[in-house]
Length: 581
Image (tube, rainbow, N blue to C red; front, side, top):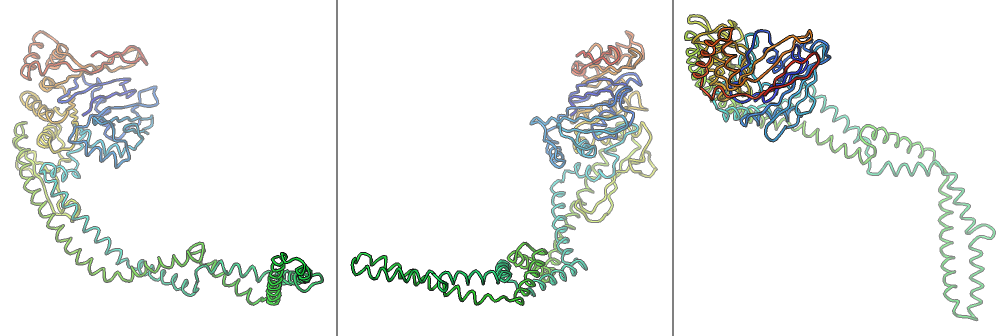
């Protein structure tokens, strides 16, 4: 429910705060005092369109903010909308903070639980928080797009709806799989493309690590002359040049051979020198052979360059190395095999689709039967409510027509109304006779109050065009609605005001040349005077007596208990409010 509302710099509402409670809350006051502005502010909190002239003269922006207390039976839905919009869940007690700032020119910023969001997201959330009805604002129930949902909620067949949605999802998934197989030209083009890429990779006959090995070979071929000269120089230093290492080793070996005749302990060094000679001789032999092979091979160098160029082209397309190209080829092959082998799977999918379609149609038929049964009950209950509201000749029809199978079944649902016997039923949106429409809307809300997923109903002068006994009946019906959902009702009828559990008075006055609006919650005595004023314009002893009689008939002390809501008392231009509780 709407627990607290604050409106700042909104037309003639410079700074107004209002606390509301469960049950029936009424707003009364003279015409033009600002009651409908409060309703307009609430409409903005449910995602309504912001007008460019909303900010009060002299202010750049208007601010509307509220604390909602979400009923237990709606918390799951509200939380799902918040999660879908990426917004914080709110407090554990179900409270929700909504703030909307409207700049001059019509731009606005929206915050939910402190997080910035859009007006469209607020509208999705707001349809669960507030439903607003008035002579010129008929949201919610007159929206034909919601009628199927309303009928389903009234019928209470959630399991049938969930089964239908699941059957449709299964059918949709199979259709998507078939569509992927039957991709037409796109699928054929993809197969051709995959074959081309695989043929290109296969023609290259790449070997794992080949790019690294070729890079090393190219470095050798490009430096053949330097490698030959260096190896030959090393060979000469070791074996063939003047004073080569092999000569010095031989000299050392001869000297040690002579010394061994004197001292046998030199045998180990002598053996090591012999081994060194063998190693040097082997190295020299290898170096000479290496130098002889390095004669240069321009043709091989060109072939290596061509091969490396091919590898670079393939790695640019498919990966940074030969190994990555080969891995990519494996993935392409798997995709091609899947596409080419899909024809066999298509037969399986067609059989599965036939079974899924049969199941979906059966679910839709069961759901349709349940809807038609519920439609008859709904029409009967609304008709009875209309009769109590003085419209015995009016009747509701629930038109159910066939539509294409979808996640909600195969039924198109629209609420139609016949305002007078003998006239054709018309869509609710086309029923536009003020007082009649008000009672029609009330009858629908009365019957659907347990099914309509909304926390707060706002009735903006839905009592227009009625009076007397009918007004009393309308008032009692509104209070019946408030037994299940919070109701905020703007009224000029004392018969309705007397039934409220909380009575708020709205008035305006001129202060320092500017109009200021005051909002005050009435205690028992002030409430009696306000009802007396509503009955005759002047507060007389006789009017007070009539007011006492109305309040007593409405429920005595329980109906006259004081409400607690802040009051704004104008103290001059730009002054803040002072509130009486």
